[in-house]
Structure formats: C-alpha cells, structure tokens
Image (cartoon, rainbow over the protein chains, first blue to last red):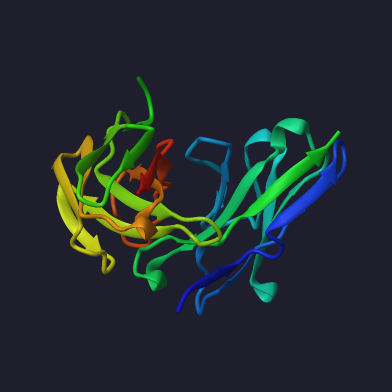
Length: 114
Length: 116
C-alpha cells in the first residue's frame, strides 16, 4: 500500500534560517510527488510538484524540493524562513500505482520565530 | 470569483439535522473531490466525480451523500451525523481524473463542521 511519512509534526525555525521539512514515501515505482501549504482557515495551496524530468523542483514563495529515488524522499526546503511561511505543510503522492489517488501525509506545522 | 469556493465556511448541526455543503469551481475543471480533514490524521478522500459521474466512494458511510449536478458544482448532503464526523471538509477540483493522476488538485477553503 502507498504511504507518505512526514517526520516531525511540528518544526520551529528562526526567521532567516533554513527551512527543512521531511517527506518519505513508499512506492514500488516512481510516483508523482506534491507539496501543499495550508494557511490558517484556508484550503490547501500547491507549492510545487514533481512528475518527471529534473529532480530538483522549484515552487512558489522560494520553496524547492528534491526527488531522491534512492532515499524515497522528497524533502521541502527554503534557504531563509519568513514570518509569512508559518503554516501547515502537506506532502502527497499519487500515480498510476496508487490507483490514481492522492495520498497525503499527516502534515508538518511550521512555526517561524522572530 | 475565481478558484474553488465552498459554503458555508462554518456549520454547527445536531445529530438529527439535515444540511448540505456546497462547492463551486470556476476553473473549467472536470473532476471534483470531497476530502475530510481531521486533526492529526491524513486527509481522507471521500468521493470523486469525473465528468459528473461518481467514480470513487472510499467506503464513506451513507449518512454522507454527494451530488454533482454539473462539472462546476458539487454538494455533500449530510443527515444523522455523529460527533466523530466533526472535521474540516475540503472540496478540490482538477482538470480531470487522468491515468497517472498528474493533474494538480486545487482546493477550496473548506467547511468547518461541528456535530453536537
């Protein structure tokens, strides 16, 4: 069965520090991978996605993620955290081997400390 | 109005009430989804509609009844709910439900449902 694991349900970083949110997936074939962000009282907004091609994917708001097949990972990074980055972040996987369904992780809440 | 909208944003209902959640997408998409988001749990896909036809029902109790009158509108009819059904209900849409599912899903703001 497909699964997504987000290590750390809560992450705190100082403003200006590196943001690293971890995502690992289980899949027998390369999946399609997504990161979504959810601000308070809002729906999920797509940050970036990987389907095929270049393994380093750049998204909105300065975020990027790298697909590492050997590590079955798709960690999300941002060089310098901003106060406005405080939100809940969800990793998701889909693909033909998931029955065309999206599987989401449990989310990581990011706090940015002034 | 653009994107995916949901009404109401907040709903409180008793276990014997009947209510409906509404979702509308203004993106010209052909697939629409209902998700349930509970605290500390992954998003749970409930229903999928592709070109107005229900294509997936992930073992959702019959007290939840979806309706998709056209590709732009999706409803979730609720009756005799239980307190454990309290959650954020999210609607999403995508271009269509394609093989491989690379179509990005766009989400509405959700309806915060509380069942007393």
